[in-house]
Image (cartoon, rainbow, N blue to C red):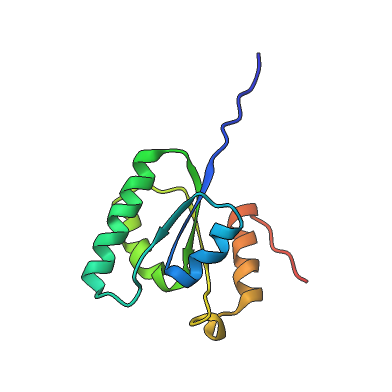
Length: 116
């Protein structure tokens, strides 16, 4: 009996500035949204993107701009998604506790707490 490991892709959602680095790093599934658009328009765009990712089925991780956290979490109730990691951008970096964020991530994914 042999085990088959499916290779899943990474998708990135954010504004132009946020997604540039991920494109340079070789991420193929990059979705750019206008974070300055109205809330309804942004929510509609995110719904379309998340529906596409759900239907695609070959994405195992979504990296999203932290500014989009509330909208994505709201839409996530209706659409089953893979793991989503929210990364701060230049606008939200000063409000972000990096150490606390990564400790919380470790706790939620590994079930353990590491102190550095």
